[in-house]
Structure formats: C-alpha cells, structure tokens
Length: 302
Image (cartoon, rainbow, N blue to C red; front, side):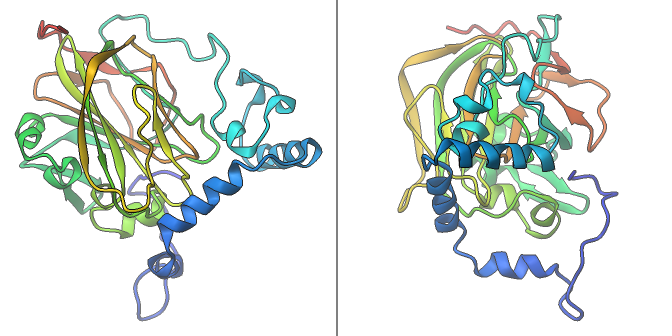
C-alpha cells in the first residue's frame, strides 16, 4: 500500500460515500483493541506453533528472514518477530556525513514545505502543525520548514533510527485515537496524524533541533523509545512534555525507538535546515539511505 494520490479508489456503500471498513473502525474501540492485539502478540506460544505462524506470515508478506539478527527458532513470541533487529551491515548508511538518513524501512508518503502552519496528509487533505505538535512555541519554529511522512507496513522492519547525529533533550507523549494509517485512514480520516496518539522525539543536531514523530495506529500494541521508559497506548494517559536530566546522545543511524507493528514516522525540519533529494511519492525507502542533505548551520550540540 502507498499513500500516492494515484491509488485505486476503495469500495464504498451506495449513498454513504465512505468505505465500509471506515464505519467499522468508527465504532471499534481502537485503543482497547490495539492493547489486546499487543497482549496476544506477546504470548509465549509453543515453538512449533509460533514458528509455523511466523513462516506463514512471511509467506504472505515479502520478508527476507536472512536480514534478521535472529533466526525463526530464536523468537519466543510474535512480537519478538515483529520487532526483530537487523544483522550488522544489512542497511549501510549513506557515506556522505551530511546526508539526511532515512530513519526507517517503508514507503514514502507526502513530503514538502510546511506552509502557513499546514502539512499535506493526502491530495486535498491538510492538517495543522499546531495540532500535530500540541506545542504552540514549537509551531513557529517549524513553520516554513520541511516535512516528510514515511509509512511502515506490517512486513517492514519496525525499528526507528536517527536521521543524524544528535542529542535528545526533550520528548512529548500525546495520547489520542488509533485510526489505521493505511490508505483507508490517510484518504478518509481528516487530521489523521494529529488525531492519533504519538511520541515526539526532539533531536538537537549540528543544524538545530528537528522532530521525529512516531504515530500510533490500529493494532500497534505500543510505541517504545530507547532514551526513556515511556510507552504509548496507556489507559487514562494525558499529554506530557518531558526533559531528560542528562541529554541522550545518538549517532547517525542509531536506534531511537520501535513500533510493535508497523505505523508512520513524520520528520519535521526547521526552515533552511535540510534539502531533499529528488523523491517520488510511493517509492520504497530503506533505513540509512539518503533522503537529502543536512545544511550545516553550525548550531552547537552542547
């Protein structure tokens, strides 16, 4: 699936104008359902059952198990398979030290410039930067800068990495809905990425602060980060903006978080901070490849 505007139209109910699955998702208790899915994915199944389920999953999805650090026999639950690590060297980083690294394996959705505080979700469908960040002060920081949306399908590698070397000093957890981030949600749920719950990582780089936003979705049990014990999809949670007592340093391409099933990552950059390469909507992207160039504004990391 891609988020390209050229995607085929989905089936709709006559007289309703929306896909049938959307109405089902409307009444589904999505957050509770996703927590249940996460619980099931963490069950320790008998090895002969678990291994058959994993191989069956790999039969239907294009997964190369040779890229994984562990073999099928090493996984003790389905979630361990979903969050599998890659073998060293499988995703080489772009050699240019100023390259803007792709933080995930996935599909390129919308990208471009944040204009008048708005980002493009899909053709003809915008959402507000202020709603996405829930931080009025940072809205002005990123308005006029660049954004890029990367969609992770269930078969993709689920770990999220840093597009540049830097330090994490602050992060935010924004509770919300858990609509699907597939074509169904992107094309039909207004303000999808600003409605779904998310964890926002603020990364201080040599070119200034950028934001790496991990968006939750239906069936995603949890989002986890490497620099804090914060997890997503917590019952009764409220918005929180946290500052780390000790800044957490990450190398370019270093791991910063993980989805317990695929979802979406949105990266935000300040004006004049990056230049994108020639990119195409719907193209397959891989961790470590160059998405563009980081412009050195000589901002200190200290």
